Image 1 (cartoon, one colour):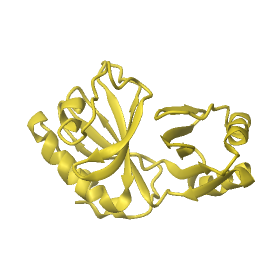
Image 2 (cartoon, one colour):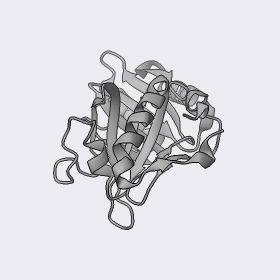
Image 3 (cartoon, one colour):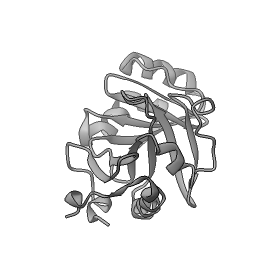
Image 4 (cartoon, helix red, strand yellow):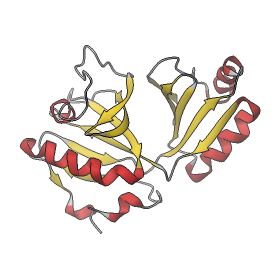
Length: 202
């Protein structure tokens, strides 16, 4: 598997890892990531600060919300994964500065990886490892869940559907487990014509 998956994110564009007629997976290499956890008694103040600084209402349940290139995914009680498509490696520091005493902020740009999965066989592929209902009626656009996939801890959320109506999901997990996840994914998607993108292999 490509060693780039275990290196810090440096590229400005996403990297296609595997593709096929019915399912595709990309690494969102352009994202900066951080975890945000409200300090004791500061939840309401934190929500107000986020709203003022980023024009985003922090989710109170497992879902993704965002505006202007910034998004927050609800991971658990008073805990979120923050993502930026614009701030680069300074995102964690910027968040820490903006949120001050209201939250604990940990930069995760090198610690986590985010994959985007699409195609009309995306659900069938993911259902082989995720023990949750990904049907459109149960897992709607914007919904998120912290769970496991093939014994690997992961958080999954649903983005807007593609122009052709096929679903789009994003999955975050520890970067050290990326190779194991991708090995599982490519094997699971093989019946739908997925194959590794050799052009992306150094």
